[in-house]
Length: 138
Image (cartoon, rainbow, N blue to C red; front, side):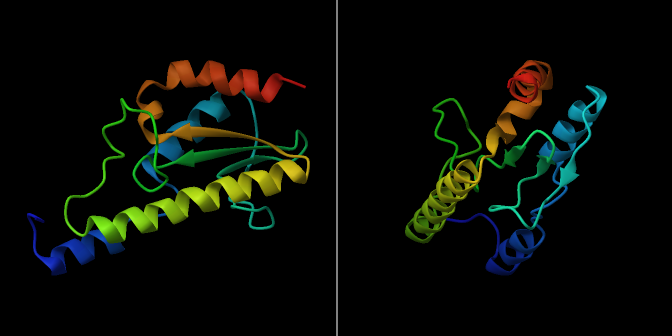
């Protein structure tokens, strides 16, 4: 059972952004501090990656754990809502399936991708090493 009114829940959901989220800004700041320059939300690429490195043919997605179904068992953000769970499960599974398809399309076009999950941005130092390895590899 939801603890807030349907009107308030609707308002909360309307206010959720798809771009310039807090996790995305954390990753962008770290990547910029490493000296890399990037493009944002390239509409011409499948899935509109959050950070795009055209010269390297690499892209980084910063996924929200809830919206993109982070499967790691230690992630507490990705839990399914208790109310209207059938609707949410179907919706979130469609999101995850679309993510897989878009990454496959990018791979087919010669792009390499990296996913940074929302819960991973809490300790960006460990992710910074991962990002640098991803961007520096041939």
